[in-house]
Structures are given as structure tokens and as C-alpha cells.
Image (cartoon, rainbow over all chains, first blue to last red):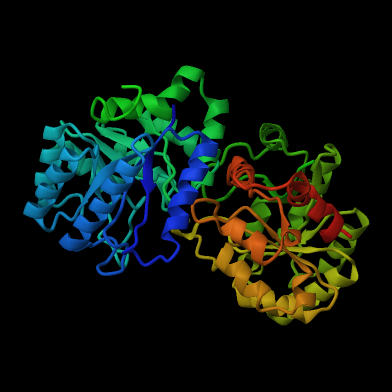
Length: 266
Length: 257
């Protein structure tokens, strides 16, 4: 059993002409790697009609609907995060209710609003109430604002997590670029923040540092945009961890924080 | 047989990295099924006199046949011609120069003279586009990344020079390859360490558009875990001969001809 907690898919209204090939490539690579479930999100129109990290309500809905269609097409392989833009509170909460009702299993917060902002509270309250985790896009040590996103770093996510101790948060792509040591230091004292190991970064020492800072019970396997690096980290952990601990990272930790019944083994 | 053309020994000045000793590297090689590694001395990339790391490098690899030395060559400092000659005499598979780390103009006269000297000595010249993701560098590590234009300029600067470029991504490789004549492009080799696999399939695309014979296996270890380069190749549907070409044959048969 292997759960990828950080996957993405594309759709016809995204800017990519090769969207079908990319989706098919993810599923094909997943078969080789042994991925049992891809837990995925679609960030609106991926920039075509509104910015990827600031998706319009209309694009949010369209992306989520496209993901629901993929989930229905591959019920044995795909689960969804509801993507929301917290600047539109009522829409975001309605979208969460709609998509969880249709079978999605988590909430995706990208970078439309800083994690420390009170506008995230109604989203996180609803996630906690519904018992689903929040996958939060993180820039590992954000030293300044980046164009195109109102990104948060690990320290800012820890502030949000402290405000919502009943909610479960996934710190996105620890290998996704940036100073991961900064993030790991920030989440030591944030027990409701889990670390998603995805991202193109495969730094020597990073996985050991994740284990040391968060403990094996808070690590989740994922791939994001590069499945080869995800597989590499999994192979590395196979040598580093005893079988029971490896299973925690592969799927047991995910099964614990997602709603019961989200995955086949539940 | 798998040859890692892009490996390092020694501590990294900007963060703690495990496995930087010869024993650590050999353990990682065994783990990833790597039979031979071409190794550079990592600390001296940042030294004012990078060639001062070469003696330690030669002594170290002399005790371990699975490691081959890639000595530093700084064409702006006295003694560089001797370093090129020593590399050729000792059978080094390549020499390395990271001009931006050394404070050199990558297309300036010193680099052109070095390229010509390496060409004359039949010594491939290795250059890294980057060593780490720019988003995570230490605040004091402000060295710019090598530009594709610099590689195009260097490959044009001498008819005999052969360049081994590491840590390049798809866009960089395409820009240099299709910005070069076929004769120039045939003297360029690329390691696979920084090229994305699925679902983007950058490596698969490059093998189809540029050709399998231009690519060699490299990892950037221990700064990066070597499993990444193995995994991206395992995700491709390569025939055994194609896989062997990337794993070792292109390095031994083409680059080191």
C-alpha cells in the first residue's frame, strides 16, 4: 500500500495542450512505483483564466469538478482535495461542503492568503469539523514575497496550526525548494502538522532531518510534480527505516489523518 | 556497469551533508548500484585556490579503484597548465572548472584558453550549471548559475574541446543543443541529475529529440541522494542497450574516446 498525498492533475480548460498525456503519465508512473492512491488537487485553471495561486471562484469550481470527474473515472486510484480560495469565504465553505459530499477527502490551501491571516480560520474550522486534513502549500523559508503567490512558510503554518489544534495540517513538499531546515525547526512544536516529503529536491540529509524533527509518525510520502524524486526518497527510506516505520510513511500515517474509509485498507 | 560522472567528496560549506567521506560515498554507491564514480573535491569549489584540493583528491582516489579523480582547473591562477597536464598524465576522466564560483567570466579569455588546453590534452572539461536549487541556497551563496550562452560560446571556442555539463535542466539542454551545429553538439554530454521525469517526462522527451548518445549517468551525490537518477531511468521504458548507454557506455565510449 502506497498513498501519494500530493498529486496534481490537469484538465481541458488548463493552459496545457498535453494535459491528457500528463495525467496518463502520472498514472503510468504510479503503476511502476506501486502507488495505490493518488490524493490530488487541481488549482483552478492553472493560470489560464485566473492565476494558479489566486484562482477565481469560477475556476475553483471548474477545477474541483474536473477532479471529481477523474475520481469517478478512477475510483480505485484517485482521491481529491477540495481547492479553495479563502478570500471568498462563503464560496470556499460551500465548495468544501459540495466536494466532500461528493467524495473528496481533504482541503487544499495554496497561496491565496497568508497562513497567519484570520480569513483562513473559517476554512480550518470546517476542515476540523469534517475531519479532513488541510494540505497547505509552503515555501520553505519565505524571506520575501514571491510574485504570483501569497506564500506561507513553515513558521506561519505553525501559527495557523496552533490556532486550530483540532485540525490536521500537511506541510506541502518539504523538498519543493527553499530552506527545509527552517520549516523543520518551525514544526517541532506543532504536533498537528505533518510533513509531506514530496518535491523535486532530493538533498542528502533532508530525510534524516525530517525524521529527527518530526518523527516517523508525522511523515507522509508524496510526489508533487516529480514522481521520480518521490520514488527516490521512497527507495532511500526503504534502506533507512525498519519495515513497520516504512509502512507508516508509505500509508499508515495517511490513513490515520484522512477520514476513515478514504482508502481501500480502511 | 553504472558510472556516476557527477559525485563529490568533502564537506559542503553551506550546510551539513552526511556521507561526504570516501567510505560514505562508497556506501551510497553500493546502495544505488553504482560501480564507479568520478569525484570532485567539494570544499575547494569555494576556495580562492581550488587547485589546492587536487593533491588530497589524487591521494584519496589512489586508494580506491572505484573512484576516479576530477581535479579542479582554475585558468586564472598560476599553475593551471600544470594541473591540466597532471590530470591527463594521471588518467583523470575529466577536469572541472566552475567559472562563476571562481569569479571568472565564463566566456572570457581565461576560459577559452582552458577550453583549448583541455581539447589539446584530450581531457573533457566538466562544468556544473548549479550545485543546489537556488531557492534554498545559503544567504551568502550568491553565485550565479552558469548560462546556456556560456556553454554555447565555449563549445564554439575550440574544435577539440569536449564539455560535460552537469545539473542542467531540459530548457538549458535544448537551448544549447539546438543552438549549436551538429558537430558542436556532438562534443557535448549532459548528466541526467537535474532533468525531470514523470509526469512531465522531460528526460524521455530529450532522449527522443536530442538523442540518447548525449546523456550520461550522474547524481550530484552526496548533495543529492543518488537514488533520484536511478529512479528516473527506471521509470523509462529503455531497452537494455539503451540503458547501458546512459549508465556507462556513453561515458566510456563517447566522452572518453
